[in-house]
Length: 119
Image (cartoon, rainbow, N blue to C red):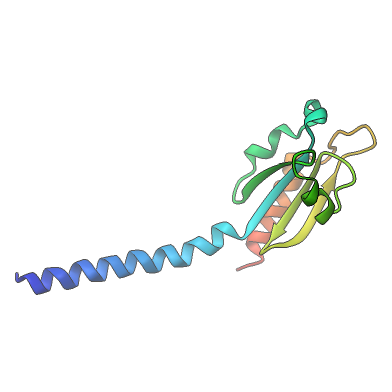
C-alpha cells in the first residue's frame, strides 16, 4: 500500500468524523433549560434540575445577573425556562411560597416532546 492510498483513507475517515460531529452537535445543543433562582432562596432551589437529560442546563442567580432577570421577565424564583433554538418554549414558576410545584417528570416531558418534534 502506498503513502498516497493511506493518506486518502485517513482523509476519508477524518471527513466522516467531521461530518458526524456536524450532524450530531446541533441536535444536542438546541434545548437549554435555565434555572433562575437567588442566593437568598437557596433552600427552595430545584434540586432535580441537574438530573434532567437531553438538554443543556444553566443556573442563573438573579442577584448576580439582574440584566438576565429583566430580559427574561423573572418575577418569582425559582423559575425554570426551557428554550429551543434561543426561543422560550415553556416556563415553570414557583408558587407564592417560593417553592417549585412542577415535577421533574413534567419538565422532562416537555424536553422529550421538543426532541421528538424534530423527527
